[in-house]
Image 1: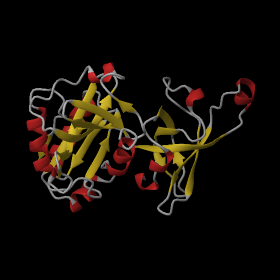
Image 2 (image 1 turned 45 degrees about the vertical axis):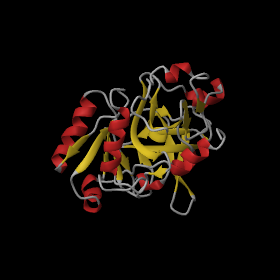
Image 3 (image 1 turned 90 degrees about the vertical axis):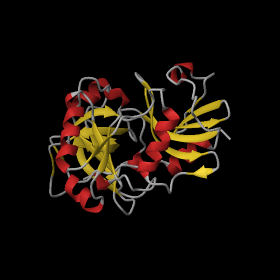
Length: 274
C-alpha cells in the first residue's frame, strides 16, 4: 500500500495558479480564503487507526519509526476520525502544517465546498497547532494587505482560495508571491571560459513547457543568489527564477536564480506562469 501513496498524492493534489488578482476574482467572486504560502514540501498525511504515514508527491514516505524528526512535530490526534487523508506541507525547520481534508473514513471530501472542509479540519486539528491559519477577506484590498503583512514577516506570499470551490477545481487557488518569479527547468549549460577552467557551469539555458507539451526556451540565466550552489544546478533541475520582465520574443530579462527546487519536476514548469 505504501508504494501506492506517492502516486495517489501526485494524481490528487490541488494546484495553485499564478494570475492577476483581478482576473482571478472575476472567476472566483469574493469573499476569499487567504493562507500564508509555506516554503516546504507538499505532503499528504494518511491515518488508519493508530497508524500514521506521510507521503510527498515525489515519492518520499515518512513513518514515525523511519522519520522521528518529521513526526516529532505531530502530536496525538485526539479528535481525529479512525481513517483520514489530510493535505499540507512539511517545512524542514518548522514541521508539518495542514490546510485541507481529502477523505474522512469512507467519505470522499473532494466534492465538499472548501469552507466546509475547513470547519471539519479545524475540529480534527483542535489543540494540535498543525492547522495553517487563514483569513476570510471581503475585498481585494484586504487580500493585498494580508499578502503585504506576510511578506513583511518574511514569508513568500499567500494562497488565495475560493471558499465554495471543490478540491482540485481548476483555477480556484491563486498564488500571490512577493516577487515576480517563475519555476523553470535547466535545458543545458553554456560553456563559458570560467566553466572550462573550473568544470562548474555558471550560465544555463532554462525553459518551460507550453500547452501542447512542447519545450519553450526562455534564454540564458547567469546570475544566482549566494546561497545557490552552482554544482547543484544540472540539466533537468528545477529552479525558481526572479525576473524583471518577459520580452516579446518570450525571453527572461533581469533574471537570476533564487533557489533549486527539489520539490518540483520539469513537467510542472508551465508557460502559463507567464
